[in-house]
Length: 163
Length: 424
Image (cartoon, rainbow over all chains, first blue to last red; front, side, top):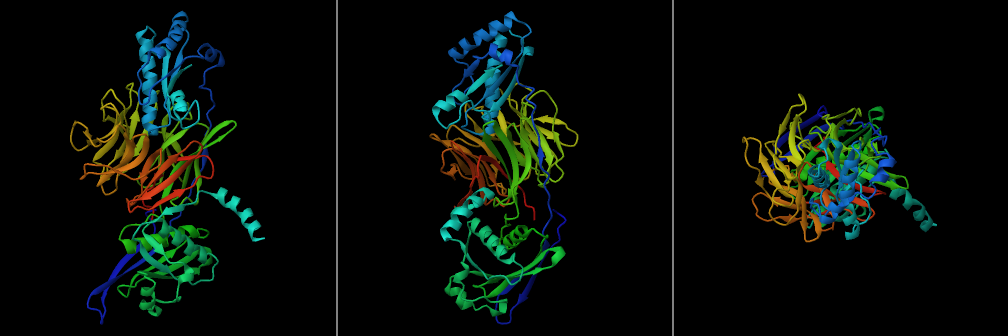
């Protein structure tokens, strides 16, 4: 892009009949050549939880207020079952995925989803679950549970899913 | 018969590509006339049309319709100033296109200033075979910079993401296109989300966040070779890449501390420098034009607000930039460093706003309900942003002189526009 031929000379000349100076910009340039390589990637979906454990924790989704990541009493109730199961079975490891609704910026929502997942993790650690059994991540606003720009959809989308 | 023809043609036009529509022009534009260029090549008429569209889209030009011309002078010497004064035309453009076969088209054009009664520019552009649009954009930018004194952006490009939803799920495509939406090309196609595309300062590489491994990670991809690499390998999510103006550093949001914190990565030796340390969210970093400051979004006051860190002073407390409203995020600097643009929430709406550093109030620039991802053109005159809705997403633009335009979506949810640097 930098190698294009570009020449700018500014001539100034005084017209005989014009008192003031006028200038002509003279340029010569060549269109740069560019190329684009397209690539395609595909996730194997291998990171998804096996169906068996999914069924075990099917109801473990907790919901949040807009721009908030603190757990409500209702959320804590929803986590009780998960914590009990994990205490009974030491081999269970879980992923907590935080999500946000579509409002606000994508990166801030990614960070907000992560804070929501962290809130869930912190509570579980407080209740005696080892942090090493928990994987935390966020999808921000990228994976809505329900489409639509309305309060009903937004409320469903501000969540942390446990699998 | 004519009606039928239109009916048949329209669907093709709609699905061809994103194409720009001007919704509102500026109040006091430069008035120019383009005399049909000489030349036998059938690309000649296309060139004039593209140049006219480019100038009109800047919002700062009015281009006289061809059938309004009173004469078609072939040389500057043939111009009768009185005739153009009558049409209230400030500048007349005369040009010629020569088909040089294998080496492409060669265009020459001259600009005549009606008020000063003199030639103000004489230019030659050598094109590449088959790339008439490129050649035309060069002419547009030459005219724009001569008349306004500011570099043009018709030859620049934009990145954006499109999410296509079908019965099997979503496909995410990262595109690069000319700044008018034409010449759209795929950079990356994935079945997992792609967000936050960013250009390297030389516009040869891009950085973005891809969820292809099931977790947000930042990649750098070479546009012309397709070579791509993870910027950092660890077990945590990584996001929000932004290049320093010299291209040597990349600011990132890392989550390894259990919370979003901003770091600076040296791309050569991979050294990391931590920039923020706070239990609230810190993300969306962006570099000042000279690379001495970093603007970012922080939740440390209880709601997202913009803060600035001075990199030239050791260990200084971030300075808060925005105070109006409970949501100000995703900020970036104007290229002249006179202010910042960002997403602002007013009552229940998210709009794009501007704050000049020497003013203590913010200026809303847009009026839709859910505007996001503002990106400013390299000349600082135009801002593109994403409009989102129930079913579709589109890219819209607003110029600082008040003109607006949209790049209508063909289908899918188009978003995350990012404007390149100057390419010419």
